[in-house]
Length: 354
Ligand code: CP3
Image (cartoon, rainbow, N blue to C red; front, side):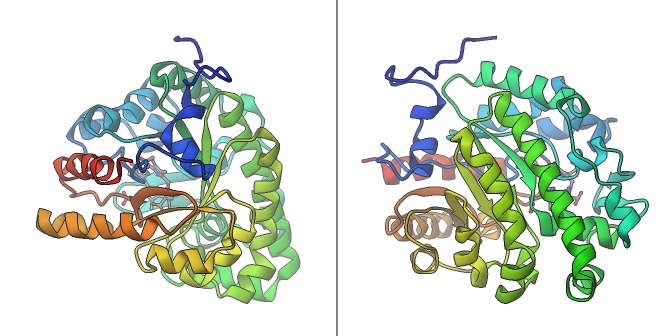
């Protein structure tokens, strides 16, 4: 394994990268860029290595994690790698009976609907996920100066999968518990927050340079309910990670009305989907935060001229933020042409070079 090049004052290492500097709202040589879901189904080489290997099996094999995490970096001049895994991996690791069904997503055998179900969610120890620390360490060695982003699912999103039993459009049972059984909700969310802290610590202690909390489906919640029923748990997670000093990113989809509160939860960077222009997001998020986003992932199916115009518009609006990390407004769609993403990463660098 290569030596960690993060030496204070050497001017090298992930901590000196444009990505980490932008997260910290420091001056950068160019706007850093990475793509949510940059690894995965849009890459033919991903589909090849995954042939005959179940998703959860791939997530438990360090050789697979390392290879798939590195695949997009061979194609794209991205400024960060994101650890290949899934948000349900820590749930599986503490014994929740679940599977990831192709074309569907996470499916839970016994959805959590009562106190006994919630009580089964225990704390996670590094021994529950030895493959995570092993893969992170190997990746940090391979990546050199390129930062590795660790991640976890946000508490509302994990609760929704656990309560509904699978993907849900309306999150009706989840909200029924949030509105109607506040004590049970608090018990479940508290346990998910603790588990998430445990899991993020494993990644950070093994060498991850930043973390992102994907509360993908929290945009379904109204602001006052977010404040009362979700924010305390997100805050607990970010506060527990703060002593490590790694940048923390907080992302959800359809969260235009929640951006201010998601900033208040304590992240260093607030992720914005494509529905709110970044200059407007700047007005919604308290000062002292960087922003990440927010090109519509579907723009990548339009002619290149349109992609270029929209990407430049994102960069222009992003200049009004204290720090900007270019990304899509949500994950890369599976039928995206990888050559388009390669060209987009280059455009971001060229158009933003200072
Ligand atoms: O960004 C990356 O490249 C890292 C990999 C990553 C995956 N899942 C791999 C994956 C990340 C960051 C996730 C997070 C995740 N998982 C989220 C939050 C991010 C988001 O998109 O909002 C959510 C909501 C999940 C739950 C989940 N897992 C879904 C909705 C799906 C898709 C189901 C399908 O097949 O349509 C999964 C499975 C999954 N996670 C795949 C990948 C590459 C596809 C499985 C496969 O290739 O067989």
